Length: 177
Image (cartoon, rainbow, N blue to C red):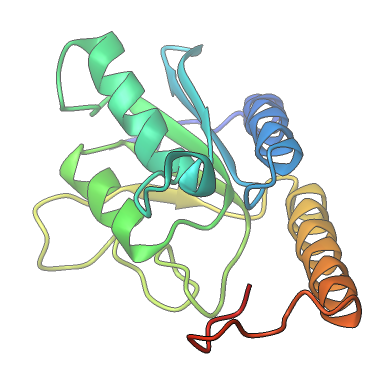
């Protein structure tokens, strides 16, 4: 059986679209992760992290994009779709990708500590699960990683500034204000 031809120019194009979503997350003060889902060369879903905004730990870009794509497709099975995401998926998102039976997952920055597409573990191709996704990593990796590093460096500076200004004084219950 012939392997599908992977057009790296398309991967670059769609990862740029995912980066646009990640920039929206950055602007909203969210961890800058963006995702798009593609079917037959068309984007059918776009999302960015909204954990803080929605106060929902499951509101990762991938999860929101999967729900959107299922709605667009009219089915929970996304067997002919590719998901592009700026950061290697976590175990929760990877599990959802397997359950929706995505054909392919393409990510930018790897996550050796918590990634579930080969970084810390590989749930997308776990041998005992009923589906395995094709994985392509490292697309526009420098851009994806740079956005994440910049965001978290800015977060750390902000936290230092708050501590310096006395915003970390505990209230009477011992909680930080």
